[in-house]
Amino acid sequence: MTQLIKICFFCSLLFLISCSKQLDSEDDVEPVLVSRPITAQGRASIKHGAKLLARKQAFRNAIANISAQIGVDYSKEAILGSTKVVDEWVVDDIYHLQLLAVLSEGQVCSSPYRKRFVFTGFPIATSGQISANESQDIYSGIPREIMNILIESGGFIGQNKTHTVLFSRPDMAPEIFDASGYQNSPVIDLAQEQGAQFVVAGVIRDLEVESTEYVRGAGFFSQVKSMMRDFVARRGISIDVYVYDGSNGDLLFQHRYTDTVRGDVWVPSGYTVGSERFRSTPTGHKISKIIQLASEDIGQLFACYPFSAAIKKVENNKVYITAGSQDKIKIGDSLVVYALNSHGGMQENELIGVVNIQSVQASFSVGKMEVISDVRKIKAGDIVKSW
Amino acid sequence: MRLHILRIVIVMALLALVSCASSTNTKEAKVVVDEAKVVTRSLMANGYAKRRQLPELTLVQNQFAMEQSAKLNAYRELAKQLYKEPLVDNVLVADQVIKNELYRIYVDLYLREAVVIKSSNIADLQKIVLNLNLTPRFYRCASSTVKIVSQCLREDNKVAFTRIGYQIADKSTVDMSCASLSCTPQMSVSGFSSKPKPMDNAMLNAGLYDAGWSANMAFKSMLRYLVLTGIVFN
Image (cartoon, rainbow over all chains, first blue to last red; front, side, top):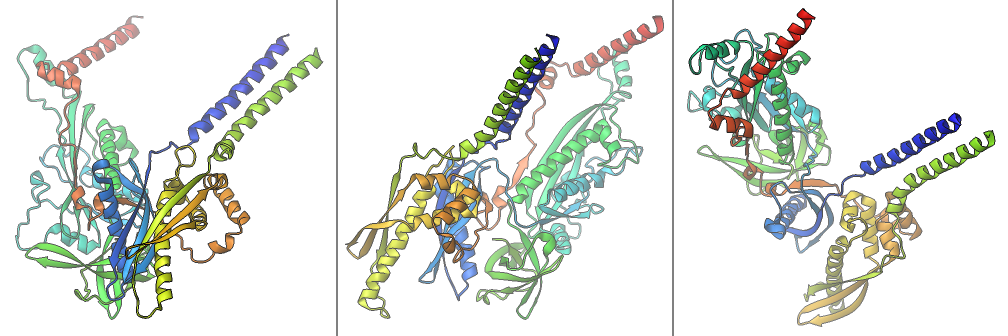
């Protein structure tokens, strides 16, 4: 009889396992996103036989038409999750293109190219908040770890310039004061020097440990409380992260991340940001959380930005671009060329054509202009964009 | 007794097998549409073209070119309607077309089965009306797996058409605020309006700035005292 009970128990367990497996497989099913398909046409005239350029312009026109079609219906986060050119034709030197797109929310842009970032150091706005007995790696460690996470995501290339600081007055950040007054913006200089699209900078706005000298109120209890703060303190963390456009120095991203730590708030000297020991300290744990958050925010926002790279050299018909296979450039890709015209410190971009990539190296690529532009001759310093 | 136990084991094992088999079949059942339940639909689209007299063409050729142009416009209009056609589980034809190139080819070739049902002239315009019948087979093929849609193309003898004139259309994502030259209008600012937590806020408003800290310290001290006295005196 006991044997029978055992068998029944075993079999019921078997049933349970089979049923639980079924439930798991139900969970595996991808959630159905509410999507909305849109078809839109775009058109652009073909000038001087520049078909590729007309195609790019027609694509942009189609996107603009979709924007107008949807109007205010879409939220700020909505993106055209997936777009496909389903038809294209030419009539009377006008390039027509039919685009099929699915509007979706909460989706992240996927970029075909890797974008280059330069990371600079994060100075502290109020000196003295990180004592000499604490880790001195925080200033360069925070941007370094943001960079590592972004590189790991696969959509970005990071250049470590964390030994340099953009701000001569960190308390005035994100304003960059140039002592000489006649130089280019340090952001543009740094981006050009490194061939980067964006420059990341930041400021440690607050890392102050609660004061032990300040006694709130009077009496014995207040004194004890003040004394106890030497052992169990509170520390505020506030870090500002800025991202500038490398081509014109515009500020594109300004986020503040704040948190509070209680307990043993000091980070021992010698601990490096990102290490296991650093993360095990209460302050290090919170800073690591901020690093993760900042990386996610930067990654999400800049994945949508069009890819851009500088033209290094123009020789005969050949155009040398400061982006190569590392940036995921492939032979046959076509990039739109914009002429950079500076007028008294203000930059204006002018579309002058499309460059067709013909050979790709690790860090640079060589292309050829589709047709010679009648707007302006292409020259070093101009930029190429994905669209 | 032993025979009885053996019977129970066999029955139970069979039951387990059946339950597992049903769990694997559910996915397939979801994919394959019940043809009997799908009602055949007809899509109609109009296409227009303006009368033009190109000097290099004869009168007949000009008329033919105009009809062709109107027909192509009608096909494009029909494609728009077809993309919005619902299949199963809130999936539209457009979703499938975006998902895989084979669906795009299948839908594109199916579109060519449309027939002209009306051709007329309105002032200097040529009007063409196209009709496309959507069969249960279309719904079944378009809503099924990539393997089945490929099989549908083979069965319809359309494989030869897929090899010519088809370039793979890459998928891309676009942020609509980047539709202009760059995404600069999309400047992102956040974290500056964050307020203290409701509990902290209430305490600060009540003038109990250190209440949390004091309570925490008092509780910890009490706990340590109890633990220590427990160790020392027991």
